[in-house]
Amino acid sequence: MQHNAQDEEIELCGRDTVQIHRKSGLDLEQWENQLANVADVRRTPFLLKVIFHEGIQFVMFRDGRVLVQGTEDRIQVRIWYDRYIGS
Image (tube, rainbow, N blue to C red):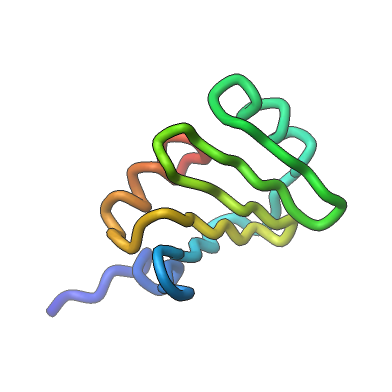
């Protein structure tokens, strides 16, 4: 089986939650402004929670981690992540 480097950056974190850590950091204020027109966003000093109407949520951290909640399907996770955050 061929090993994909991207797989090392994605791990299951529990029921219906997958973590992706592809970026070295995230500017939560910038992402709040960017995603506010497509989802409900709530920012704390530590994280940004993005709630999409389709039942998917992102929990974004300054260190670059993103928890994608609402599915364990890695293909769906990659589609959502790439669509809104980019690879």
